[in-house]
Image (tube, rainbow, N blue to C red; front, side, top):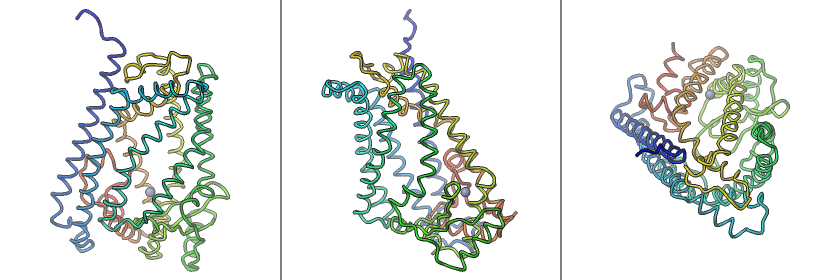
Length: 425
Ligand SMILES: [Zn+2]
């Protein structure tokens, strides 16, 4: 072998290497978590003795194990689908087909059609998993409350919303990629940033109500209580709403959302059913802590920086022939731009590489949770937050005994034992 590796073959090899490394890492983490949870299933861990029943502990273990088995199947299928789209030529085939069938269309319309067809096929492939998760997995552990008709209407609304918002954005981005010269990625970044900021503003008032009913909190004493808490924490009391989360799931949550006049506090009805007023206070104080410590702007800034880096990288990759051929696609030669192909390949390939930096973001997120807890303790009571968290961990059947490596990679929130230990310290 006197010839050196072609850039295209090298791209394939690097992609396969990271794909396999990521697959093995995920299988390894999954196996570790399964062993750890199964090993601790027999007894309630010491810090929780007397506070958690054996029955609840074992339900959490079984639910966690069932989710891990499902996760394993999803990982394997997801990898197979990714390889089918790229190296096995699925995307190339779809593109050739559309170029042929839509030969009378403009280059831009053909590209939009490619992305839309890809999104539709991906959604159909994901449908069985979504059905299984809601109607088998969640159902078996008593969490699912979604009637089938509601599930169908959710999927349809989601698809319409995705098309209504996504297609114009896609058209604009593809047009920029072709017409805005070599700095198109900078323009695209500005468009993407604006789109996200607008979405953040319109989501609570226009999009969330399409899926859930929001009613003003009518419990006078609780409203007085949370208004006082917000004043203590330096927030203007804004709208308090109760969301009918129980229509879909028994899982509970609360969030604080929106900007300026649209700012609102949203409690899931399931949360109000499960927690005492003092515990609701403590959970809200935790959410306010995320705002006071400026976690939200930090996360937004991080997302903007990473999308800028990603788009700059795509700007360069999209001009390299080996980027296409190395990932199983022949670039168009009929004058149709290759921007949609580049976009899809990039969106599919990027997670293969970013998986290995995910522990950094998970660690940052867990640190933010500790900071929000600390904020809550200074404005409410640590004991109330502790009992609220324990109830939520139990009601969500989260395992109390996760594997430490699994936590490092995947946990955006610290495990219960660590969180409660800090509250009591
Ligand atoms: Zn939090």
